[in-house]
Length: 465
Image (cartoon, rainbow, N blue to C red):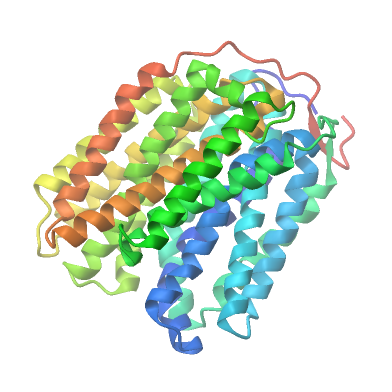
C-alpha cells in the first residue's frame, strides 16, 4: 500500500504502533497507585513491592536495543505479533496471580513483551511512510505515549478505588488481543535478513542494561556503597564493555555501532538520555510534592498531574498535523528551552500551600508542551537519520537511551531528597539543567538526507493494493 509524499501516514500500521506504545507506557504508570493494595493482599512490605514496578522497567529498558535488532533481522511483523501475545498473556497472568512471586514473574514477562512491541511497531510504520510524512507519524506515535502518561495515574486511582488492583491488568487484554490479531493480518513485504544478531552479545547487552538500571533504581534503598549496588554497577560495566568489543568485530552485532558514526543519530541518543533525566525526575517529583507537601491524596495527585500530560499529548498531535513540521533540531532546542525554563520557574517559586490554578496548572502545561516537542524531536532525529532497513534497531536503541536516562534521573532525585529534606527545588534545578543541555545538544542534530521507502509497504490483508 503506497502513499504519496503529501498524504497522511498509513492508518492501520500507525494505529497498531500507537496502541502498542500506549500499552507499554501505560503499564509503567498505572501500577504505582496499586502498590499499597498489593502489599496488603500479599502481606509484603512496601519496600519489596517496588519490584512490581522495577522488574517491568528493567526488562523493558534492557531488551529494547536487542529487540530492535531482532525486528530488523527476523521480521518486524513477526516480532510485533510475538510481543503482543507475550504482553497479553503476561497481563492475564498478573490479573490472576495467586501469590506475590507469580505477580513478579508476570510483570517481568510484561516487560519482555513491551520491549518486543515498541521498536518493531514504529519500524514498520516508518518503512511504510513517505519521508516527507515521517515526522507526522512520529508526532502521533509520541503523543500516544504522552496520553498513557496522562491517563495512567488517574485511571489507576479510579480502578483501584472502585474495583480492585487486578482489574488494572485486565484493561490490557482487549487491546492486546486486537494488536495481535490486526498485526497478524497486515500484509508486509519481506524485509528480514533471516539472521539473528549475535546471541551472546544480546545476552551481554541485556545483562548490562538490566544491571545498570538495577543499580540506579535500587541504589537509594540498598545504599550507594552497598555491595549489591557496587556489584550491579561493576557487572554493568564489564558486560557493556564486552558487548561493545564483540559488536565492533561481529558480522551481526547485538549493537549496530555503525549507527553512532552518524552524527545526527549519536546526537539523538544523547538528547534522548537528557530528556529521560528531566522527564522521569519531574514526573516523580510532581507526585511526591503534591502528596508530601500539599497533602493531596494519591488519586487527587494523579488527577493533578493529568493536565501536563494532556498538554504533552496535544503538542505531539499538533506537530504531527503540521504540513511542514519544524526540524528535529528546532523541536529539541525549543522543547528543551520551554522545559528548562518551566523547571527553573518551579524551582524559584512553588508555594508550600496548595495553589493549583495559580502555580501547578501553568507549570504542568509548560512542562507538557516542552516534553512533547522535545520527545517528537528526539524520536524524529533518531529515526530519520538511518536507512529504512535499520528503523527498528535505531528506534530500540534510542528509546533505551531515554529509559536509562530516566533511571539515572530517578536515582539523582532520590539522592537529592535524601540528603536535603527541602530538596524539591534542587531537583527542579537539576531537571532544568538537563533540559537546557538537551537544547545545546540539538546542535548535533544535522538534517539527514531523505531515505527512500523502497518496497517495504504494508496493507491490511483485505486490501491488495
